[in-house]
Length: 211
Image (tube, helix red, strand yellow):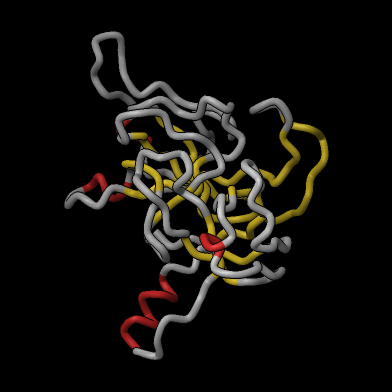
């Protein structure tokens, strides 16, 4: 369902528990909203500069990882059978070509979103994501318009995980080719080389994530 009036803007979170510790806002999870692709400064404070008419598409997700999830990383959607697959992120992505994933709202404050709270997972439109901290993790230089997939990481709780990498062909096998195609997350809107591994280096991506 597309929300006409979102409960919060990009860069903000929604409380996920009441005063007694019960989960709340379950009815909102999995809903979509579109936001203008504007310049953000200072968290949710927007500038007046509209970058493009193409909107950012975001889905409301609950953090069920057990700890805070930080912005500009890929979050892995719950793999447990049932409706959790439509509304929960249980950690950072750690597997090459992983799916389904969402981009954890890159406009969140540095502390990210606390466990059980609700945030926007970006699945469409232009938004930045962090690069791996090693050149090898990028699977080669990233060219403008290059196809991008989830990078290999360590553990779902490590903030060094949840990164983006170059798409690289693995085999000509048809079944695997279909699986790889399903894992394409978007296309690069800027170029990066394997030498650009300073912590915090990001890349602008035009996201097209299938959920």
